[in-house]
Each structure stands twice: as C-alpha cells, then as structure tokens.
Length: 274
Image 1 (tube, rainbow, N blue to C red):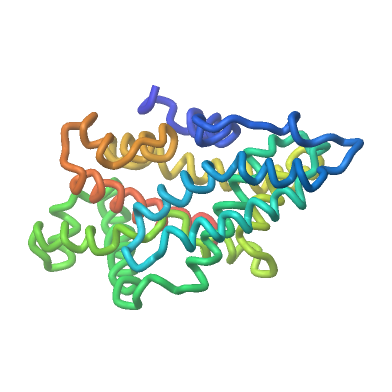
Image 2 (image 1 turned 180 degrees about the vertical axis):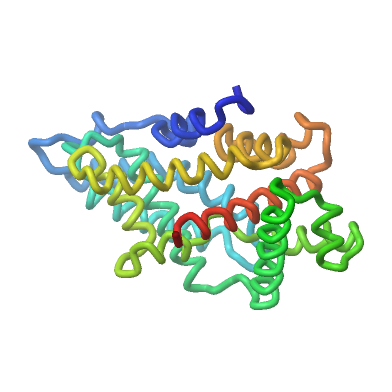
C-alpha cells in the first residue's frame, strides 16, 4: 500500500531500518558487559564499509559532479567510527540504524561546510518555494506546473529547466532542523534523539512531532509526486527504476522529485517555525 493511509505507512517506515539489503550485527559485536576490542572494531568497520558506499552513492546521485564520492565515503567512515565509539547497546537501538544516522550526518555536515549550492540556485529555490506557497494558499490545493510557470512568467519548458537546475538540493535542508536546536549539529541532534528515544520522553516527543509533520506533508502531495517520494525514499529505488514503473523518463521523475521536495520544504519550514 503506497497511496492510502500514507501517514501511517510513513510512521511505520520511520521506525524500521532503512537499506534493507544490509544486515544488522548488533548482537555479534556489542555487549553490555565487555568493550569492543581493536580487532573486532576493525572488523566492524570493514563489515559496514559497503553500507557507507551505498549511502554515499545515493547521496552523490543527487549532487553536482564537483562533489567527490570519495570525500563522502571518507566522511562516512568518520561517522561510522563515531557511531562505534558512542553506541550504547543498552538503549535498545540497533547499531545499523544508529550508524546510518551518524554516517549520513557526517556526510551532510561535510556538504554544509563546502557550501556546494551556489547563491543563484538558492535564490531560485526561494522563488520556487514562495510560488508554491502562495498558489497553494490561494487555490487551496497543490499548484500544477502550468499554474506555477504562469505565476513566474515562464514557459513550461523554462519552468521544467528551472526544476532541473534545483534538483540537487536535498529535501530536508540541514539548516531546517538545526534552527530547532542551534546549539548542536544536525547529525548529533537526530542520532542522539534516536539513541535516547526509549529513556527520554522529550526526545521521543520531538522525533514523533517531526515524523508526523513530514507524514502530513507527504499526505498532501499530488499523487504522482507522493508515489515518487515513496518509491525513492522508502523502497529505495533509483530515479531510473521509478521511471520504468511509472512510464516516465528519468528526467521527468527527477522533476517530480524536485517539485515534491520544494513543496515539502515549504510545508516543513512553516510547521517548524510555528
């Protein structure tokens, strides 16, 4: 089930492991009574190296060519080592889940430090977000491509070109959640919230609120965009694979993804600033 009860499906997905092709080895390497010895530690790093490469490759596929895959992998290794050092088996969280947050967080922190999004693209993203927000408020529904293009005084091909130019921007802007906790990094904020969710009711509430806000925003997306998001983020298909399923070109799927991300960014900024 992908379309119906999308919020419920999303909530369930948030509590499950991502990257199902990779196994969890928490019990094989961690114990409450003994520390991880150097040999086991090195073995664990090697065991999870394919996961780092997988995460880096998916992230790099949405980034411009100047962002090095090797640099992302290097940051991911640092994130993995950090996860090993800080993981607490008594928190009842699987190591794979915790490691994914640390790995992704390290990569996103590196991208933020590089400031890889040009100012011109940031301005275009702001214009697009404003356009979608104003039209949805006026129309009471998500705007179509034609309506958004008309409001921006662009032809439809020009509008689609604009979507292509902004497609490298990730949907959950690293600064969006950072604004909620300016004294801590995003990677630490999310992973620590996950780590402490069973013992800290406030952390659980924070994560649940964010999850519910994202679920609600996804629910309100147009059907094809909602399906694209579901297949890409939950089923972890590539844009090309989604295109085969829906009968569209990879470029068209990428544009649907861009529109969905812009709509979600607009809704989440509004929700988190309330």
